[in-house]
Image (cartoon, rainbow, N blue to C red; front, side):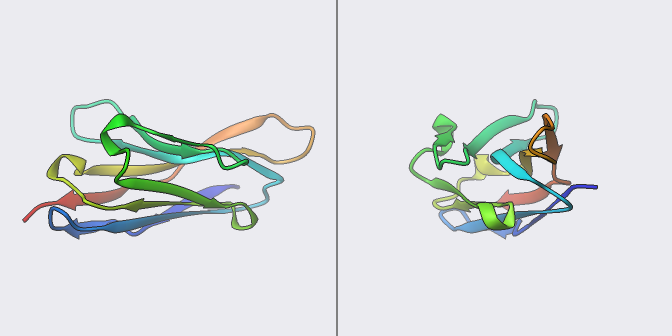
Length: 121
């Protein structure tokens, strides 16, 4: 059973920084795209940032230049460094990943449980 466990959320003042971490547990052959989404009450979940196995990074326009996504393939982990945080970044942040359990298996999509990020003075 594969699980994604997130950590690092919390309350921060505008202009501050937070680092989110997400690590996978379970038997995984290969991790493919990993990334972060966020969701506020009444809104759809939106992509924040993602990174491929080869290190190609993708960002939402609203976070470009402020957030940095990274990963550790050996640990099947993904991170999100968030700088210059704004009140509009307040949301529940979800880790997302595509894993293969064996060389011949398809990839499956997994979600973390979510971690709250609140930007407020």
